[in-house]
Image (cartoon, rainbow, N blue to C red; front, side, top):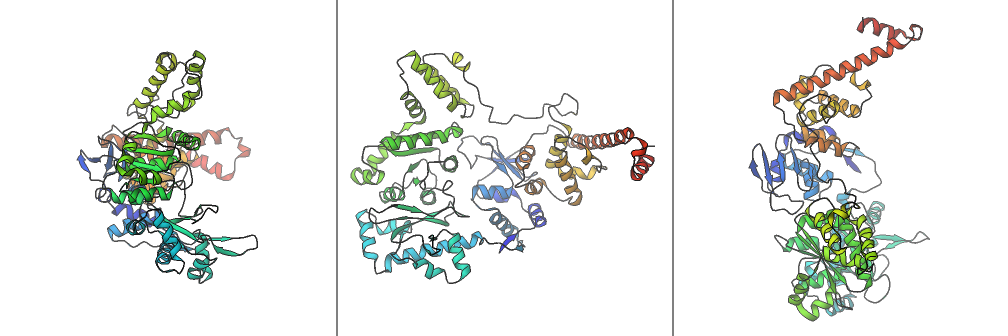
Length: 577
């Protein structure tokens, strides 16, 4: 059974919750006029650009663009799901979350978390108690892992056998369905169902909150696949998760640097030697989402790759994925290991001090970027330098405008032995990433940069109580203007629910095509006094209502009298004469 939280409850919840009480314990806020500020928790910065508005119950970062309500903050900062955020806020203000039950074939996510945690404990128990444990323990000892590290990462074993987990946890049809939903079962063409993980060292994969969301399993010999991960499930998406991030955050009050390595054993082996700031992707290239998570946790990310061709190709894929995130108060670097070495072998041979020295000498992103591009051309010739510019152009377009991009362009010009003025003739600048204010002045004149409909939506979002001062708006839905449907929906919602605040209005749009647009409008600066805000909105709605009436009148007058219905004739007599 899956529960659906009633909209009315969410509305009531957001009128009781104070977003300051949610954010301040996690990110200490300081008073700044009528708002509060802090350094943004979603990217690294030295000067605070993260603002919380008690009036709007809304947060916004002018640096990275992060924004949302108290619900959105918990989803982003604490990595909670939408229902989990609702329950967290309800607990904060002493409310009980009601649910309307609807049939579903998908087990609740919470049940999956609980199941995976139990299975993880089962695997750990098997490591210490199963008759076959000796060969597994011997393998871990050969890899140099201590009992402390094995316990810290909750390493366990899946014993040999087709149905150990299935028999232990699949005692009913519903339980077997949950096992399958959690990615713990496989089946063959004959329809036989069996344990996905068999005779493997088991590594539980945890999300940022420490919940088990999946597993990685390694064989003891050279059979394939050497590593097997959980498949995609409702709670496990390998393109979003990083092995070891939970442990790294737990080990460091503040992470100054994170090292990305290739596998579980690299993370664990480094931790064994007190290098506790390493994470690993889960069989995928480093994705933009991986990098966003990491750059919220640390100002410096170091990619650690093998020095062979495959390692450098993987490094270039990571560099490409990082392009839209370059700039700001963070650094990306690349570290390449000697031939035949991986982090596990290198730190065992040379120790943590030498390994950290190599990390500190990692190549800056810009050096790696240009070295990789220059390897494709003959930089000593004019033709080669011209080709370098052409190769670099599509990559530079993905980099946000700012100081870092300008400096890369300057470096490209120097390497191509040309000037930035010549270079700019051939480089198409990407659009500005920071949104420009859309209000040039507070006026409804034709020269204003915003349409009346958009202005009305913005005013209602930021000051919902202004709806109480409006007259009739029943005709404006007939207008064919951009945004008119959204405006009418907001007006009707506030007419029926006059207590709603900005946060509640925004949450009602979650998951719709207009959600992001409304979030942006909610954070725009309106340089108007309270009286001006009221007159502006009243005037716009009155004008739209008048426009709709005149449009309807013109439509009826164009029709031949014989084509008018009785209702239309009555409408003309009652309203237009």
